[in-house]
Image (tube, rainbow, N blue to C red; front, side):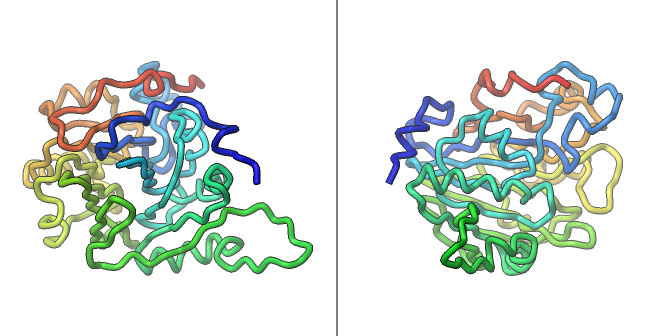
Length: 298
C-alpha cells in the first residue's frame, strides 16, 4: 500500500504541544464574503479579515483532528491552513454551506491509509445526510465498481456526553428558523469550546450548557434581525450572560466590516475571522498566522 502520509507530508501551522486548540477555518455566512457580484464596501474591502469563507472549525488535541461542519469551502480551507489529518467529523445541521465539502474527505482517507472516518451528528441530521449523500451512505460496491468516494461512517450522536478521541462532546438542539441545528460543547484536558453557529434563539438547556466556557463561537449574522439567525446585539447579550473567557461572533454576513465590529465591543468579545486560532484556556487568541492574512483577491 502506498505511504500517502509520507508522500504528502509537509509542515503545517496546526502543530503544537498537544493542548486542545480551535482553528476557525471559516467565519462567514452561507454566501461567503465577498458575495458573488456584489460591490458593497465589505465585499470590495482589501482588509483580509473581511474575506470570510463559509463557517467551519478544526479542533486538535494530542494529535487528534476533529472537524466541525465540512463547509462548501472546505477544499480551499484545507489547502490554506494545511490541515494534516481528520480523525472524526461533527455536523451541526445539513444545510449546504455546512456539508458540501463532505466529498473532499476522501483525500484524508488516502492520507490515513484508507481508514474510514466517522461522521457524528444528531439523528435528524443523519437522516438528511443519508439523503444528500446517498452515494456514500447507500453505496453497494460491485465487482466492476471503481467509484472513488469518501469512506465515511454516519454515526448518531447521542444526547448524553459522548467521547470522540480525546474530546468529550455534549450537544443541544436549537431552533434555526423553520429548521433545527445543533449547538456543541467540546471538552478536553479540562478546557472547553462551544459553538452555536446557526440559531435564532437560545434555550435554557443551551444556556446552562454553554456557561463559562473557554472559547465560545456564537451566531452573529448582522445588525438587522433575521428569522433564522441571532443578530449581533442578541449575540452580545448572550455572551454577557454566558461569560466565556473568549467570545466571538461567527457566520458573519457582508453587512458590516470586521474593523468596525472590533472597535465596537470589548476585547474579549467581537468578530471571529478566518484563521483565528485559540489555545483553549488562554485569555486571548494567538497572533494571526500568515495564512490568515493571505486571502484571495477577487
